[in-house]
Image (cartoon, rainbow, N blue to C red):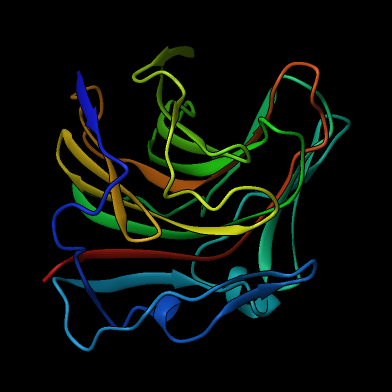
Amino acid sequence: MSASNSCRSGSAFPRVVGLALALAAIVLSGGCALLLDAASEGDYAVVYEEEFDSPASYAGTYSWLTLDDPNAAVWVADGAIQILIRSEDRFQLSRPEELTTGDTFRLDVGACLVSGEARAELGVVFYVQEDWDHMRFGIRKDGMMRLRRRANSSWTDLTDWMPCPAINTGLDCNVITVIVNGSHFDFYVNETWVLEATDSTFSGGGIGVIASAQAGEPGTHAAFPIVILSEPI
């Protein structure tokens, strides 16, 4: 595995035909708002999008994982998939349970932190396997980011936590984009390229969102108002 990063404007940001995320501001209670500019032409076409705007939407083609236990809760409300971490040193993901990808795709996610301590994390997962192994890209309230891999139920940090000025810090929203070409991954935050990595552990799987609370810092609450999967044209 190799990785490099730069929180500066880099290569041209790939565009998506029909990207719903570009059509309107994402607005949640508490003042979270974000607007991603539209483009009329693009390099990718949308194959799945979820805005969680009605029960018929999120319970339709693909059913998203929900739960409610002493450690975490996942539910749909206020036009978003919500994840609350009640315990410290815990993560929880949710995904459209029957949706899988090949090894070439783009994932765009609106990620909003509703509450949490300084190291509260939220992010995206991809190449999710049947045993819940996956690749995970996370950003934190304090402006840090990290790439991890869960394989054979064991974690490997593919990067350390590192600062990235592209992240909107505090209780705010970000657009996280992952572009996957087999074992090669490019990560963007708010249209800024922030990380390039290669890893050949997986070659397909599910997609989803994740939130976590660090040791001594329970209470992370994240909301994800839109998830879009695209494929090259």
